Image (cartoon, rainbow, N blue to C red; front, side, top):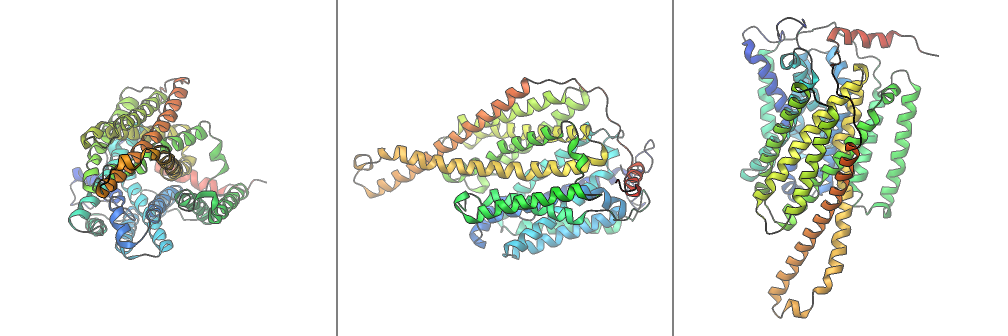
Length: 531
């Protein structure tokens, strides 16, 4: 999508003449990877940050959700920015934003400001990634075939997520948790130097002004998304409905959603157009990705509890599983490419394969979780998780593109990522946390009767060791119970898909070029208001 001529040889006219043509696309691949490595805060350093900053786990997780919210809410604005500013301007702004946020974030302790910084960093992150990938799309697939583009895109996105986690943990171990921020800042400086020396300002189409954008709608939807994230993230800490904070927040969420929907239905150019919600199969896709993300939220709750409270693993030990996750991600993306592009098989059956992969991951952990295992026994289940996650991410996005017109695709992609990156995961994590709290208490009360003077013995040190092992065993049993319920949900979802079938798609939908997209957007603003 970076070439002015669709049928001619691929060129990148924004590069200066001294840059060899063969390495030009790879420079943009490097840029995309560096943007995806970045973040507001980094989960691999979570425990050290909690100890040093006196912030709770929920506070730091909210930073992650704010960063993801910034990415999700910005999708409808990506094309408008591309049509208004040059590629060099947007990339310099994105890299500068990521640089500044990573320099400031480690020193901020005021939570609303820290969340705002992470939110802005998410906007810069997705802006930089989109600008890079949109300009090399024709290099990756001259026919703009999304069955090629999306699997390759997710290798970069999901692979960079694992690489970021690995880098943050090892930098924290050898130096300090803030060194990851310095590392990303240094990479952004390299990006800026390359941009200033190798890239020139270039426009493929005529500049299009930034009018007709519902900025207030974007703010309202962002507020709604952050309120939902805050609600489920802090609900267990506030003890759910026993807290007046949660009760008041639930009312605020309903009111915010009411205002968002009312504005969407009453103005000419809302942030999310009402017609976007009317496409066939859109709602099932959104519900399905929410359920899938809820199932995969076991990674951030049950696995963390097992590694830290049962096995007592250090971060440098448990992070070794990221290598298997990375292998699974690459394998899943390549498998999706082979299935959708090479063989042209049914998308629905590929989703079934992905759900089966989630089932294998959950059952692998259910039958493996024990205090007597070696870390290598978790390699295969972790690989299955990466494989399934990559397949479903690429397939869902391809399905979304197939059922939507391009006019509403990025609006739907924004809603999709709200559920994909935030709502599904935070709801699943809240549910697992609540269930784990219940089962731990229940198991301690059930099995606690076995603790008596005979079992403890007379030695106080043996008594203390016995209690510690008892609590660890209760945590282990509780984790397995929650995994069991997650398996039931995954099997039910798998069976529902087996009961449904759809014809194999034979033809690709034609994707419009830059000029036709600009013309289509301009026509929407020139039409008279419907009375």
